[in-house]
Amino acid sequence: MARSQETFGKKEQQKKKAQQRQEKAERKEERKANSGKGKSLEDMMAYIDENGNITDTPPDPSKRKEINVEDIQLGATRHEPVAPEELIRRGVVKFFNESKGYGFIIDQQTQDSVFVHINQLTEPIKERDKVTFEVERGQKGPSAVNVKKEVKA
Image (cartoon, rainbow, N blue to C red; front, side, top):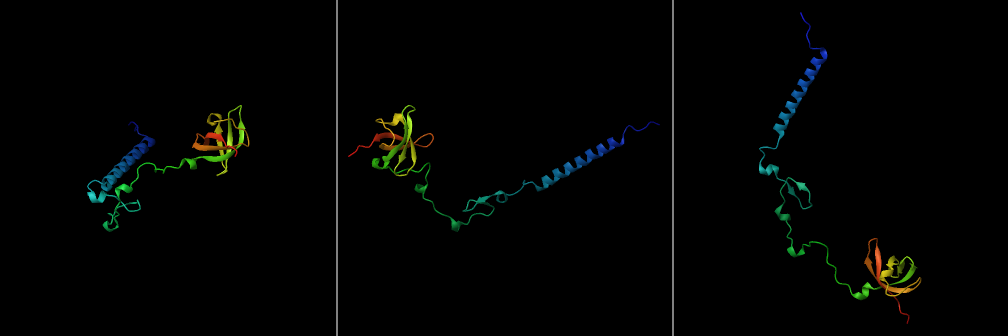
């Protein structure tokens, strides 16, 4: 009689694979039993309460708020026009390098340092000159434009 070709290791592997198939079939049946198929529309419905939280209870009609369509604002807020006198600021030149073409002005109102480029000057300036200027938003922060020396009275 010939010896069986199946070894102990092969038998263990076959048992292991059969066990895995069985577990997989059980998980599949469990998923089928717990699936949402066949639920009614009401069971699947979700609501958002007045605080923005998701809930399964419908909202209370007595807590309903009326919203005026004109009150809804889309986009950025509109700024009221500012008088040109308010845009002009006063300051003192803290530093200015003519060879490089830039410097800084100390704003008297806010005590902030404002960058100024030589292209924004209407006349040559030097350190400690009193100037008037307008502020614009530059690439790296506030930038002075339309810079003029203050006339001495």
